[in-house]
Image (cartoon, rainbow, N blue to C red; front, side):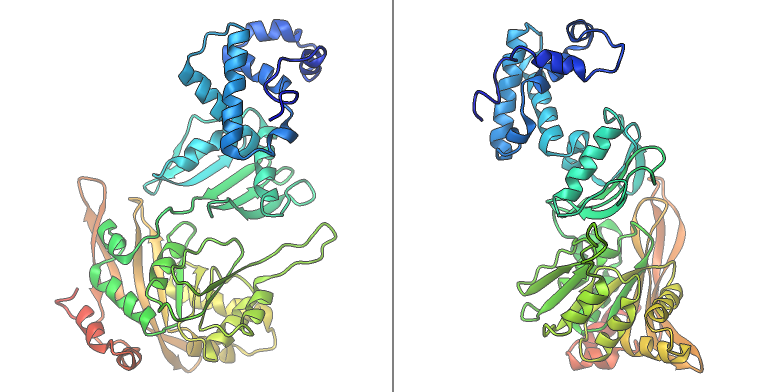
Length: 454
């Protein structure tokens, strides 16, 4: 950066600008700097010598080098005793504040953390191995949190402020973010980050982690390869998207897949994937593009399969119609506590978009569209497990009939704190055996569901 803007000594009057930013009644800047810690003293001098609007135009690696040089220069000029490691830490902190996520940066780099939850400036929690724990990390104040939140939203063309206090966004690495700011968030701005997994989980890895059994994983692979329409159900953070990603790996590379999401987070490995993402309304309340709009347009894009990140509203009717009209092998997730609840929620969503349809007609649509419901749950030992795999069979009168293929049976708790259990396998034949036979997978399906396979 130009020496006149960055990395120079403060000009006359700039220290007064620092003093002017202090609260009324505070001691002069010079006195304050002497009484503060060395870290805060360097921070104040750093801010007085940097033009942030010019600094952020540099690429991050080059900006980091320039910040390190300035921190070193300040420490030398002011005879502040900080070693090279502390200078690098300070430079990293300043860099994160200027172009990153401030104190959240180290949490994002920790591969063992799956969720970061900010509840105001002084309360930050993380999830490790399925368990929540409080960190010692803090923001300077609530405005510091709001600044980071606004940086996240603006990076994808969205905004968050008093007039639009809630937003779904994503980070550059694909991590999903939800932001709520005052006046809705009473204790300070809230930021919830679901980190993007650096490597997509395979069924082999999920078996090793205890998320599924080997026979269950094999049946789910066969279901995806047999082009069943699958609905993955579970609570928040139960592993629905992770399981959907694992199942999608079975899709042939010669198929055209269209994904529809509110905030893109799916990690499909196929080469022919078209990713669509919703758009919120602008300041005038116009320009919103909903999942339903995207789904209707996707049907004109010659998809082989449609993958909806999460069905949550009136787009459910369009999803069912797509599944019923030749787009076999489509998948989606839904928030529900059981397979039966998932089907009921789906029915209610359809009625939101088509209020004139009788319940029987809606249920017939569901039976014709959904082949398999997979229920997942994050259990008290922190492990996310598939709890039940349920087949949708048909209707008896007004009731949708189902059949459980697998059910997790809890047996106890080990000395290591992990739960013990086994999967109970249905004794009857799967309803989709004929579909599996069409794809040459009937023998493998029956082998996976045999007592020996379980």
